[in-house]
Every structure is written in C-alpha cells, then in structure tokens.
Image (cartoon, rainbow over all chains, first blue to last red; front, side, top):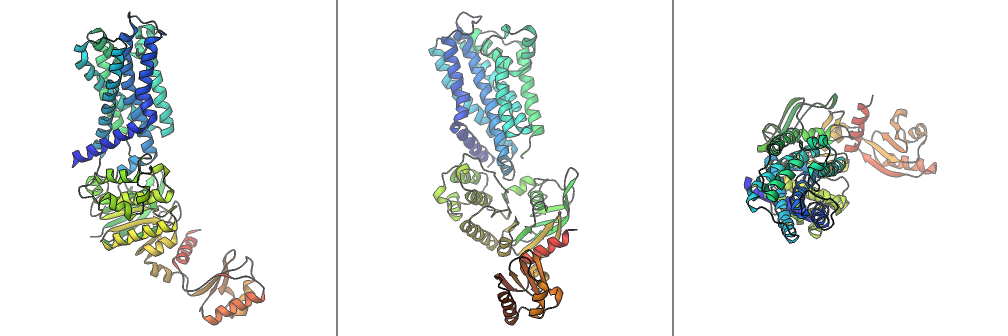
Length: 243
Length: 305
C-alpha cells in the first residue's frame, strides 16, 4: 500500500515536471544551449586546451543544480501556495512518501538530462574518463540531496513568488562562483575560498576531476558535498510545514 | 461513541483566541452545520478536528481518535474539503481523482465520482481553468474518494451556481443516508437550513445558539408579519391601524419591518390596506414564526455590545 502510494505520487510528480515548459527550459534547454554556444564560441578562455573537456562536466553540474535546487524548490513553493501540500496533509499519502516521490522525480529528470547532455557533449568532441562514472554518480546523488534540502528549506520559509525569485537568483549566484562555466581559479582568491563552502563548486570540481581529468576528487569537495547532503535536508525536515 | 466531539476547545494564534471554550458533537449519519460570520472560529474549529491545528486546551476526538496524535490512523477514514485550493493547478479532474484514489486501500471508482459531481464534461480541463463552482465540486469529490466515515466541508457551496448547489446537496444527502457524519461550515443560511440536522451558531469563537433548524427557529422571535417597504415608514401609525401595541411594530433594518403577534389573514390585510392607503409598495411579505435567519440575526444582535 505504501509502495503503491509512493509510485502513484512519483508518477504524478514526474508527469507534472515534464509538462512544465519553464522547468524543461531550465533543466534541459539552457544547459544544451550553453554547452553548444560556449564550446563553439570561445567566450571564456579555459585552462584546458579544448573547451568541451572543461564545459561538459561543468554543464552537467549546472543541469543537476537546476533540477534539484531550482525546479524542486519553485514547484514545492507553489504547491504550498495553492494549498496542495495542505490538502495532501489530510490524505494517507504521508510526508515520507511525498518527499520520497519528489526525490525520485528529481532523479528521473537527472537521468533524462544525462541522456540528452552526454551524447551532445560526445558529438562536440568530449572524451570523458569512463572510469570516473561511478564516482560521478555518487557525487551527483550527494549534491542532489544537498541542493534538494536547500531548495525545500527555501520553499518552506518563503512565499511562493518570493521563493521563485530567490531560487532563480541563487542558481545564478552559484553558477557564477561554481567553476561550472569558467574555472574556479579565475576567481579572486578570497572568493574562490568562499565558493568552496557551497555545494555548487564542490559538485563542479568533483565532476571535472572524475570525468574530465580522471583525478581523485579533493577532500574539501567531498567534505562540502557530504555536509550539505546531511545538514540541508535535516534543516528542511525540521522546518517543513504542510501549509 | 459520537463520530466527532470536542469539549471546551480553545484554539489560539499567538495571543489571539480564535475558538474560546467550544463544545460540540455529532453522530454518524448526522449533518452538523457550523454557522457564523467571518472570523467566528468556524474554520479554526474544523481544522482542529482535521488535525491541522493543535488545541491550546480542551479535548478533540474524531472517530474516537486524537486528530494530531493519531493522524495517520484518522486520515484513512476522513474526507476533507478545504475552503479553497488544494489541487495541482495543472491537473485535470480525472487525473486528480485517480491520483487521490491510489492513496486509499478501498477507493471509490474515480470515473463514477466524476459523474456524480457532474464534472464528466470537463474531466481533462486543468484545475486552474475550471470555474469556481467546478473547483468546489472537484474538491468535494476528492474528499469522498477514500470512502470516508467522517467528512469536513469548509464552505462547500461558496461560489457555486444553483445547479452545482443542487448536486452538492444531493451528495451530502447520500452521505448521510450511508451513515457518514458530515460537518460543514457556511455563512449561507439557506444552505444550513436545507442540509443540517443540527446547527451551531458561532460568534467570537463561542457557540451562541444551537439546536435543530426547527428548534432554533422556534426559539427565535415569536409569530409575526414581516415585510419590506421603503425605509422610514411611520411605525406608530401602522401599529394603531392594525391594532397592535405601539412597540410591536418595528423597523428591524432600514426597509425591513416586523409586526409582532398573531399573523392572521385579517391582520395581513390590515397591513396591506394601510400601506396601500399611504401609496407605499409592499415586498417580501412573510408570516408565521421565525426562520433560521431570524434566529441567526437575533443571536448576532445579542452578541454585539
């Protein structure tokens, strides 16, 4: 019975996400456009010889952030605003199944993003380190938990319209200080250190190392990813309200 | 065991007291209407019964369960219609009903429910494009999909057209016949009059009157002739003309008059003849003892300092 509810809710969440034009723009269209544009037009001279090697992991990180932070947060904020969460609170669905379905829907969209972005990257001449795939999956799941917790936290404390602006603003801010589309090392030293505290830079660094360079992921990135993956969902659960 | 009961219920928001020592109960197969103006504490009471609010003091039981502590057990047996919203704006009625049906172990057939509330023709229209009345009917259907034993309807007929009201009334009648306890809030007196077995009139978070519709009407003002005419009619002259005591003819509200005492055909004729002689129009003539509306207005008047 519990599984039936979880599956029904997951199906509904996935269906609604895929039918929302603005969420597909953010999660699929923008990453693909940035990937093609920045790899063809060398706006940002990168440290590595070919720009696609740098851009492909960075854009994957960007796509993950769009889904798990922005998309989840905005949708949840409006569901609260429309009284949907409140109404669900008096059904047998229950909080764990609702959150489980939301997480499952995020992972489904992320899989779709990989299915779209990886072939495009390969077509643009990307040569990933295949051995890093396992590490990359672990890194993405940790980042998803961290971003998702942060997004739900925002959706829980802000009004839907304010949250819409805040989530998009945070996405842009984190994009600028994440090393996703330009190397972290290009930032002033102090800003680079600040950036490393947030999960965006850690995710980007980890994917670059795992998929691009075949390096080990540095300790600071693991630390940031794990801390956010534990603390942000805990804070979201502590502040979560049906209304 | 009553289907719902609360005893000395107090609900507070910060320092504001929304419900102030309310006791009520309703049995299976009974329709209880909570009546009162905005801010009387109707929604706060219902949302406490539903488990959304924790009482500041007092005890609340629904189907013998504590609505907050035993929420998991209660939600499977309870149907809820919120005052507004509550459905994904992009979701159509059929999809929403099918989704909600899968939350319950023995749900109603979603398609049959859709027909029951008359939404078959707009089954695929997203919620946000339904009319207010259609949204209300979908909310009602969603409250019923789990075959509840107790149903809470917060302003079920607000914004609903006459046809929709009829559909909602029929559904509530069918629930009652099945032994479901229905608690509804409304500030529309005719709805309460038609639907409720038991009415509790709330003001300022307290029950100011309660009973069946007939009991409330009987306890209200006694027999009288009530009519509408232009404001400012000379009530003293009218009293003399119809042979009533001077204080028995009153202008209750501008243009609304009451002639207390027996409401015989002869007296009605006297009122009409006097108005005719003054060349005044006559509207909304009613006779007999008070209605629920009279009882309600009297209860509200008594509340005002």
